[in-house]
Length: 459
Ligand SMILES: Cc1cc2nc3c(=O)[nH]c(=O)nc-3n(C[C@H](O)[C@H](O)[C@H](O)COP(=O)(O)OP(=O)(O)OC[C@H]3O[C@@H](n4cnc5c(N)ncnc54)[C@H](O)[C@@H]3O)c2cc1C
Image (tube, rainbow, N blue to C red):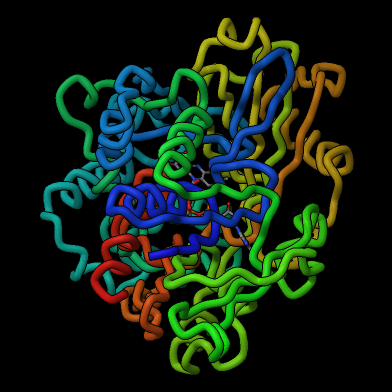
C-alpha cells in the first residue's frame, strides 16, 4: 500500500515505522519544520538541543524504553534521581520521599496521614479503572483524603492544570497519574528515578525517519496536509487524495483551511493515518468524508493549551527539578528546572528553567509575547526565589500547544473517538485516545503501533 501518515510526532513516526516494517511505503506529512510534535526540540545554541516543552520518562514507560532497545539505542536513556516540591504558603516544601509528606506542615498531621494512606490504598486497589470512572477527582479526594487536602493541595493543582473544569475532572485521570506511573518499587520507593535521553529526544526521531526512508517512504517536514478527501473516480486504485499546504504554512497557525495550497498537484494514497488533534482532523477532512456521528465525537472533546516559557538563567533558581505550584495567586502551574535533573555540565554550564502553564483557549495570557509574559510572571517567580532578577535571564523561548491536554471529565471513556474512523483505510490516532493513562511519549509509541495494526486489519 501507499500510505500517508499525517503528523511526524511520536505516534506518526512510530506508526510509519511499523507500516514500513510490514512492507508498505509511507509518506509522513508534517506541518512544523522539524520532527517530534509536542516532544520536538529547539537548538538553544552551542550545539545543544532541548525540548520545547519539558520532557522526562517514568520507569513505568516501558513502550518507549522498548523502542529505544529495538532501534539499537539502548544506552540512550539515562535514569536520574528526581526531586519534587510543592510551593504553597510562601515556601517550597520538598516532596521527594514519603518522609516529606509527614513533614508537610501546611496540612494537619491527620490530613497528611490520610493523604498517604489514600494514595497507598489506591495503588494497591488493583488495575481496574472502572470503579473510578463515574466520580470526579474532587469527590474522591474529599472523601478519601479529607477537605483540607483538597482545599490546600489537590484543588489548587487541579485548577492550575484544568482551570474552571477542575471540579469536573474524572477520578479516572487522577487514578492513572497516581497508580500507573507512580507505583514506586524497590529503591525507587525512597527516591523516584526519571528518564531522559542523553542527546535529547531528537536522535529517536532521526532514527525513525532513517528507517522509514530506507523502506521507500518520505518524511516531509514543513509540508502540512491542507485537505484530505476521497480520491476522484478516475483513480480507481487509490482511495484518498491529499492536498498539501505550501512551505511556511505553519506561520498561518493550526487551522489547515488557512494554509495556502502547495504548487504541486494533489497526491493519492491507498490508506491514511492521521495523528493530528481532533479539531485539526475535522477541519482537514473534506466534506462528506467522515460520518456526522464520528465528527460529533471529535467535537465533544475539549483541550487546554500548554503555554511554556523556557528561560536560560545564569544561575540555579530552585533546589528542585519539579515544583508544583499550589498557591492560586501565582499565574503559572509549575517550574521545572531541567538542569536540576540533567547536569548543567552537559550544556557547557548553562541552566534551563521551564515555567509551565495550562490554559483554556482564549485565555488572555496566551496573547502575550515572551517578554510580556516574563513581566507578568516575574512577581510570582520572586515569590519562589525572592532574589530573582530579570538580569538572570540570558535567553527565553515561548511555545504554545493548543491541543496539549485533553480534558478528561466523568464518563470520558465512552466519548473517545475510535481509531477506526468508519471510513475503510482511514485511521485516527491521537492523544485523546490515551486513556485511562495521562498522555505522554510512552503512550504515543503504543498509539502509533496500535494505529498501524488498526489500519492493517481494515485496509
Ligand atoms: C507541556 C508539555 C509537557 C509534556 N511533558 C511530557 C513528559 O514529561 N513526558 C512525556 O512522555 N510526554 C510529555 N508530554 C506529552 C507528549 O509530548 C505527547 O503526549 C506526545 O508527544 C504526543 O505525540 P503525538 O504524536 O500523539 O502527538 P503530537 O506530538 O501532537 O503530534 C501531532 C503532529 O501533527 C502535526 N500536525 C498538526 N497539523 C498538521 C497538518 N495539518 N498536517 C501535517 N501535520 C500536522 C503537529 O505539528 C505534530 O507534529 C508533554 C506535552 C506537553 C505539551
